[in-house]
Image 1 (cartoon, rainbow, N blue to C red):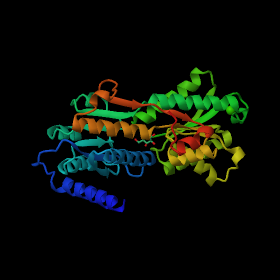
Image 2 (image 1 turned 30 degrees about the horizontal axis):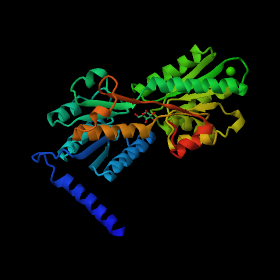
Image 3 (image 1 turned 135 degrees about the vertical axis):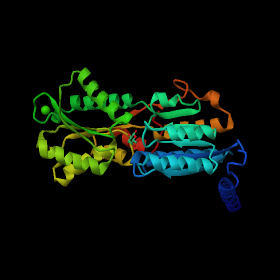
Image 4 (image 1 turned 60 degrees about the vertical axis):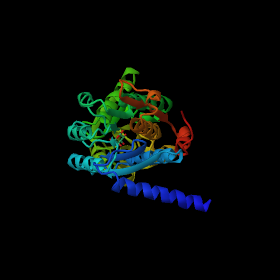
Amino acid sequence: MEMKKILAAGIVFCMGIQLFCACGKEEPYEEDKVYVGVTYYEQSDTFLSQMISCLKDEFQNYEEKGYETAMLIRGAGGSQRTQNDQARELIDAGCNVLCVNLVDRADPSEIIDLARENNVPIIFFNREPVAEDMMQWDKLYYVGALAAQSGILQGEMAIELIQSDSGIDRNKDGKIQYVVLEGEAGHQDAIIRTENVVDTLKSNGIAIEKLSYGIANWNRAQAQNQMLQMISQHQNKIELVLANNDDMALGALDAYEKLNYTESALPAFLGIDGTDVGLEAVRDQRLAGTVYNDKEGQAAAMAKLAIALVTGQGMGEIEFQNERYIYLPYFKVTKEMAERFLERKSWR
Ligand code: GAL
Ligand code: CA
């Protein structure tokens, strides 16, 4: 048993060496070896950090099934220029497929040109390039989820909450006073989630009144600051906080905790993602609910596609939408379900 482990560690080590030494541009690719280069927009992003670790697990699984894989991962620190350099570095290191989470989803041209020149397919993920850019080359793919669905599900959770708990309408005026915490301006998951959650509430006849909104770039600390400002403006009028992700919902809660609000004086908070911290907060009823952004499903789809693109095997089994898109569904997570999601038990 021990011997097997040492042997396995040795093989992994040698593969790593090969990747860096034997895969210079002048060397022909050995197409059965899958060398994945990953670059993502920002290392501090909670959801993406968890998603990248799912991706590592997926390739590890393929490794155990006998595939030869290696992975290089880079975080771009929020700079598109850095990310362009990373894409070049990954291709120079011998990667034969790239997984790219763009910093600027409207600016993929340099990376696409580079990949095309070297015939390295790209799987974009989570930050969806605009459709015209996806047409630049036929080896461009996208794996993600449909933002509209997450907004609709968040809206449905809000409706269930409002209808089951008359205490949400704190001032009993028959309307729900709400604020929105939004992700990055220009990100498909920010604009579309907000539009859809609000439309779902309205089209189901829920009377709502928007008090304010703040852009907090998916970030917990920024959300706390935005929320402190909104509280100072509206005091205890806020009844519902709709956040485009869990980190911002938690940041809003942090603001109330900082101001020493008692539990009974808090509004309801809804997030999206189902990160571990988000799920724990739903389980503990600190958040009223979240919408699961299926990082395991997305990572599995990316790994399967990467293997198929490099080896040429299994492409026929993959179901695409619009030929080169894969969208995984979202799921509602209430407190009853949170533990199940935390334990990664099957929920599909
Ligand atoms: C969203 C996710 C956010 C953030 C963002 C980054 O899908 O809900 O938490 O990770 O992607 O692009
Ligand atoms: Ca009210």
